[in-house]
Image 1 (spheres, helix red, strand yellow):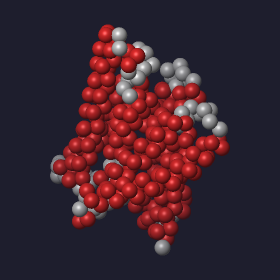
Image 2 (cartoon, rainbow, N blue to C red; image 1 turned 60 degrees about the vertical axis):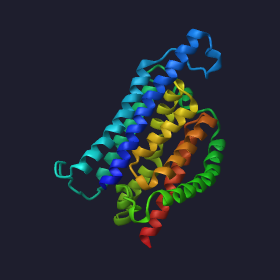
Image 3 (tube, rainbow, N blue to C red; image 1 turned 30 degrees about the horizontal axis):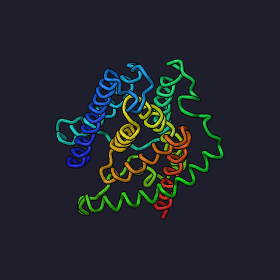
Image 4 (cartoon, rainbow, N blue to C red; image 1 turned 135 degrees about the vertical axis):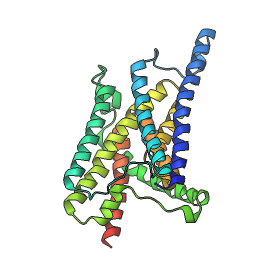
Length: 284
């Protein structure tokens, strides 16, 4: 990655992690003070006693993502010291293996948030909160504001990043879709983009990290910080603002509906539409 872009992502990631930690500390201090002074009714209520296990697990996930950003930053700053990266062609078996690993990670977070902690998975993730018909309506209707706000995000980006610096670094999955004509690999990549990524990412970010942060802070703080974390994890400077807007919409839809299936569907539709455009463009 370009050193300047890696440095920007590193700084934003650092501010995000510090913001989460300091924010949680500040909200805890405020609630402690309000409780001792009898003002607890004046602030947004929490679920009660702090669940240190949930909190530490959420922070561990956040620090894992941050560690990956730090690694990218260090390698970009010291390319000579960094271990050589061998460029290998994407294979069907490798793509399937990546999907399996990603699904296992999502399954672990899903299980830890519900089953392992002795909770009902349907209640934790709102799986039966609304009907399939309403989920579908939410997903389809949300596509309109999603693309409107993404256009706005790209418009803002044009003023922030000079045109000569605005050279997007495509994700490996996008590069493979464009350059690889193997239909089986393309299908596997589409499955990853439309099914695996939306399900796993929404479980981790909207389904687990967001509720944990909200429980010990405020929904606006939790929504903003979760969306910012989601944005920097994707590692694209040119897409920071559009992805931030997308993440906020996903969080808003989850907060309103209470069902993780709604942001999963919106995320899947978004990735699916973009993947179709990529394939059409590459074929053209």
